[in-house]
Length: 113
Length: 115
Image (cartoon, rainbow over all chains, first blue to last red):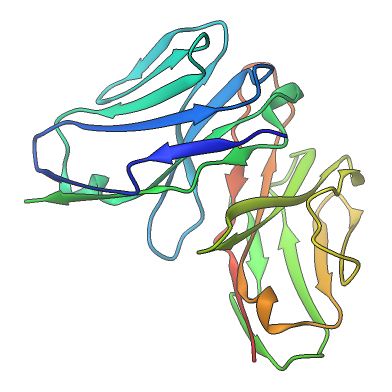
């Protein structure tokens, strides 16, 4: 089955700096790669996603890149703000409509002001 | 919309007791997912339904776990009998089968503690 590895497990950055979180996956059939943000005491919330027919996608300060050959994808957050502090999860799915997501272990991002 | 609603938010029970977690998906959504989150195993998909029918329950850890969806607006996850290793946060999520968005909307979770 699919296996998703995520690095780093914790990341501290200064406010205004960029943050990069990387994930690798094992199943070459995976074609949907979302990123979820989880704040303390809440459920995960989708922040951006990418499908295998796209190499990069951007939404304001957040961007995701995908390299299907190498089977890895990354989340980039620019101009970080204190409210970006949270746990971020990558995931992958080879199923229709992105069902049956396999999540990475998560990255705790701390933005220091 | 109120979002995905889960109850109870916290549950403390003794080993051997039956536990029932409840979920109300977002109105109109046709997929419902149950996840479990622990420090050791992360976020795992247990089971998901489409139009109230279980599609994949391969993530259900053992026969002590069962899930039902009697109608489009209600689902339960039952653990009987419960064990300390079942302690976790259980999330319910829902989405609408669409070509443009695969987003799953998560509820706030139920924190289960089995003593």
